[in-house]
Image (cartoon, rainbow, N blue to C red; front, top):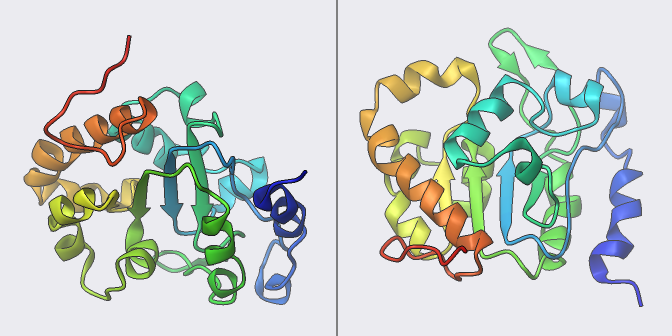
Length: 207
């Protein structure tokens, strides 16, 4: 019998709800498997992801994998990481970067997909739009990321976007690399080792 996620995937991949507003047309980009213990809740695919049909296959992805402490092989294993952006398709660009995720997307799909991912024990909310949705807050990114300890206790870790454009943000907040990144790598290792919810005080039991 097909699982809820298996029934959803063809619909998700065929979605054209926002196509009239998309400069390159609709191409939903995601990575989903009901076994995944970690969900990357991102913003929207960039131009490179749209061209390649693969999320985070760019400089932002290289930096994110460095933050997580995982290889490309592990990152692109859907049994390890589910990747679900707030907007499934590339929204286009503005003067200062990509446009926001299309607002139609999350109400159509997000909760339905999350309900079909029973294995998730750790959610990484990346960037202002994912942070606002998952934390139910419009507070600035640095305020939400600074509260990472409270989120991690609930299996939800807030992160800035790993785009090279955010390098100045990271440099201006040394606590992010000193405190958040070690906790992030430990939580990722624990989640993949089956420790739920991730506990910063315990080391993962990996042979």
